[in-house]
Image (cartoon, rainbow, N blue to C red; front, side):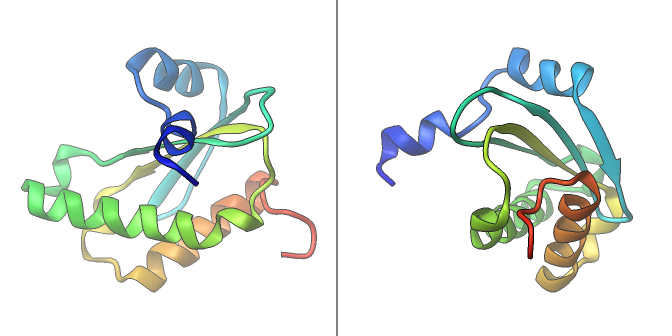
Length: 118
């Protein structure tokens, strides 16, 4: 995937985030919250949000990297055609990668975004 392709697959501005927050569905667990809505495209657009309540930028960036990596490694299992936002919760501050990945897969499963058989 080239740079232009990667840019298309990100939720960029606050209007796009607001649309997903206001009109989409959401599910939560102890580490993450997922917001999603159909986008009528052949690919997913993804957004990540980490609250400042987590702490300083070093901590926030670490959590964001863990969430992004969990998504990257599991993106092939996710149904296409959605705008998806993953929002961290304060408890994600001390979570390991495996806990973040487990939380993400749990949310994707209960939201019905995992492909059949995953």
